[in-house]
Length: 309
Image 1 (cartoon, rainbow, N blue to C red):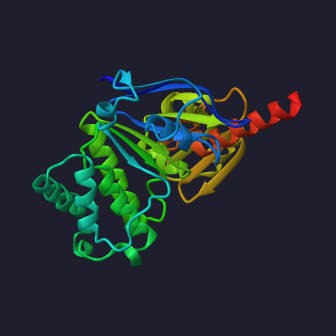
Image 2 (image 1 turned 180 degrees about the vertical axis):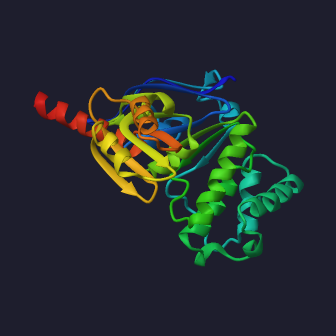
C-alpha cells in the first residue's frame, strides 16, 4: 500500500505559541490510524495544515507522495471537521448536491451520490427537510455524507461520533471499516478511546504538539499482570492454589480474576488449576487499555515537565 499521508518535522507557531512541534508520522493506504491527544494538543492544527487551511511554520507534508499544496492532490481527501457548519435554510439533499458541485462533480452524478450517501448514513427519510432544526447527531451524519462525496482516498475524521447515539457510533464504525477494506486510508481523531482501540490498527499520541508515542496497538498495549480464569466449578482447593500465585483473587460465579504476583505468569495459573483438578474452560491475560496507556503517557510528560521546571 502507498503512503497516503506523511508528516515530516511539521511545526506550526501562532505568535509565541508552538501548536505543533517538529511532528513526524505516516499513514498507509488501507489503514485506520488513530490520532490522539488532549484538547489543544495540536491534532486539528495538524489536519488543517494538511488541508492547506493553515500554513505550517516549518516541515513538510506529503499526500500520496506528493506536495500537499497541489490542489489536484487535495481533491483525493475527505474531511469531517470537529465543528461542522451547515446552511440551516438548505435541505440535506440540496446541500450535498451543492457540495458535490464544489468538487467539480457534474449535476447528474452529484444527484446520484447525494441520494446514495443519504441512504448510507440513514437519513433518506429526512432528505428534504431543512437542516435548521436538526440535532447535533443528524448534522454529524450529514457531515459524514459530505466527507465521502468525492470518494476520497484519504479520509480525515475529527471527532466523528460527537453527538451520535449508539446506532450512529455503529454506523461510523461500519463506514470506516468498509473504507479501509477498499485500500483507502482513514485518520480518526477522537477522545473516545475505546472506539479508537476497537477500530484502529495504529495510533499516534501527541502532547503539546510533540509526538510521545506511535505504533501498532498490539505492541503498545502490553499484557498486564491480570489473568481471567473460567472453570466449571470454583472449589476451595482451586482457590487456595491460586491465592499462592496472586496478590488478589476476585470470584464471580465460575470466573476468577487474579492479579498475579511478580514473576508469575498465565502458565502458572494453568498448571495450578490442573493440579487442583479444575476443568478450565477459559484463560486470558488482560491487556492494558488504550485509556490507561494514554493517561500514563500524559502524566509521565507532566511529571517530566515538573522536574525540568
